[in-house]
Amino acid sequence: MSEVPKAVPFYDTNMHRVLHRVFFGPDVPAATAKPKEVTDLAAGLVPPGRGWAWNQAVMEFGALRCTARRPACEDCPLRDLCKARPRMHKALACVPRAAKNGPAPKYRDTNIYLRGRVLARLREVSAPGGVGLYELGRQLRGDATDVQPLRLKEVVESLERDGLARVTRAAEGSEEAPSAGAVGEARAPYAAGPEREDPDEIRVSLP
Image (cartoon, rainbow, N blue to C red; front, side, top):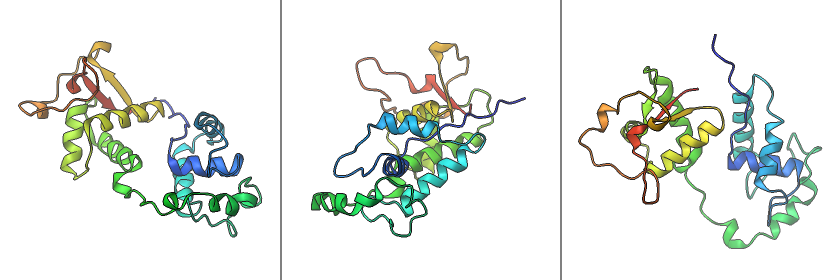
């Protein structure tokens, strides 16, 4: 019998903004709470057995309603509970103009999008040991997903921290062979520093 996935929160900018405003107050021009405080709070809010739906709902709420510069406070369903609402208009007025008008990143350039593409790929992997990190990056490029090697490594490690993926290395006892798709191709570094990990020795799978 497979284990029930842990109910854990994602770390996402939209989610962080919503939870900070509701429970701690305005997040601009400076945050009141530290990221760890918000993350610890979120971990206690995820309903058992409904982690995925809760994460998606809070992310979407932040992206569409509780936005960074134009939150819909007046008709917000959380307006009577939100600690930021009474001071939000004044707090936003204190944000420097350059920050207000800065270009928003495209959705395809965000880690949210990349995390989703990685999970979608992992669901298609049938091999017990998952897929090598190098091969995973090659497949994502085939999907026209622009991903740098170091960024991909950081994303899969963040999925592991959230309990959504499993990352193994050859040094940890993995007996999986290197990915065939990696043979004969030039490889980019997956970690900074003089001792770089071989991406073929890093394998990713669903937990």
